[in-house]
Length: 310
Image (cartoon, rainbow, N blue to C red):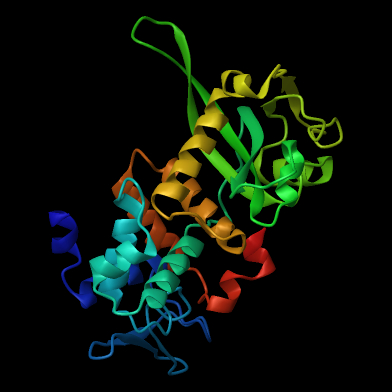
């Protein structure tokens, strides 16, 4: 924390960091692609020598037109990326001294959108895949069909299974990267779409034998089935993905006290981002701003759009 405060002690220091993130090989004008500009230090904008356009380091990013100072954006990103149990909008409001809870909530969701990197590689190798339900209780429904309840959401998940040898030379397994996505149902169409989007073809996928993981859904993949006799033993057959689901639910209930279905995907994206960088929290902060500085502005309406729900 001390190093962070020293590095980003002023708004100017934060803006300089954004410049390095956005224009790694030097400034490029977004209007004419000119590479020569001078810096107006009072407003901290670059003025293109060719067309005269003025460009701010935060223009077109998730921080664009925000009334929150850029230094507080950095502080928020640091808290979100490095605070082990995560942080809620109410906690963020208190930490930053923001008077309006809705402003803190909006800021936090903008950062969550910044956690999505469209250029990330798909999972590969040995994969465990399964689904789980997120939300409150539902009456009169059982099994995977419980997702039809109003406050229930079905979430598909996949985790890379990495092998290593312990101190005694015995082979062990541990969880690598993960992917999570809210889906409408556990039919082969939605399962197949999730797998093709997040898992590299040719990978071996370990499942519990649910019919949604059909030959059609897993075409191009190697399928390994581990039959689960009773639901209570599911965690023994697929320990890694069930551990991910268990920690996800604990985090949603403990830190955020539940989440509305229409905003769930944003929380899933944050959980994936944090889980995949759990061993390098400071690198997570740098990655978050590196990704966020290339994201367009996000409105409140967009947070609840169909794209955000899926």
